[in-house]
Amino acid sequence: MTLTIRNEQLASLAEMMYEPIVLELSRDLAANPDAVRQFLRRIRTTYRIESLPDVALIAQIARIHGVDFEQSPANAWMQAMLSDSEVFDVSRRVLRLEREVQRRKQVAEHNGEIDEILGIRNGSQCQDIRA
Image (cartoon, rainbow, N blue to C red; front, top):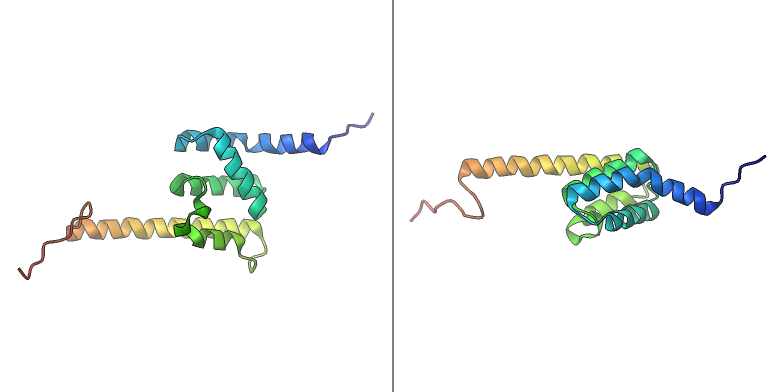
């Protein structure tokens, strides 16, 4: 007896593979699980990101920048990195993006520390000492 798996069944199994990521990301972002599923489905389809480790890295980035992060005009650089045809390996694109996100996060944190040292807090500027 031969077991036959139809394409619809295979697609359903693939979706189930990502479900733990969907539930965790939904909880972390207080987002609707269906919206997270749609986001991950679009990411996987648009950028051909299929491996579980790559999808998990995308979820890490979404924790920092939110669902649909690469569609924000302020994050156009993310979309460019995910679409970079110069980098053939999809996993390498995802890893490069994750590293750049972490680098930028560290720079922002460092800049925040400098702002605190200089007395710039909550949008208020240092007093002009020329007055």
